[in-house]
Length: 198
Image (spheres, one colour):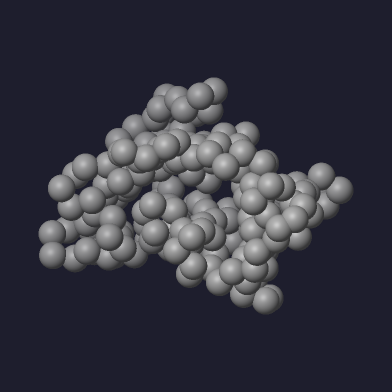
């Protein structure tokens, strides 16, 4: 397959800027940690809902950008207890330090863009991720310019909607930090089908 000649990161940013919401199943793996699987929902201007499949099956976490607060239901939404937390609370950050208020595709693309400014971008070719055709792009930081704690991103951008469907981040030693698969991505979900954000 011949890939179109384009800046896939810029296309993804434009696609993200144009959408109103999305839902996706995220699968995150990192060395020495349990795989995390989450049904993830996002609605502009920054509402987030995460329904955990594993670990912590049944737990729900929401972020409201208007209040700046996270609500956590350890045993499912609208059950007792409910905790209200700050997004910088270590209890609800990932092992990599990810915060719920910076967990969306837009935040990822900001980090990738920052790395691009201090590094090199290479389109390596087409690939198939699951049943999706994707462009494989590698963004590598030049030495001496650490931007985000990540020194290299490998990204696979879905050729039909332009957004990333797989991301691998690596540290300075080139050891993988995290691999994230984004499955069943739905963009601009009708309000009647969008899970409430608590």
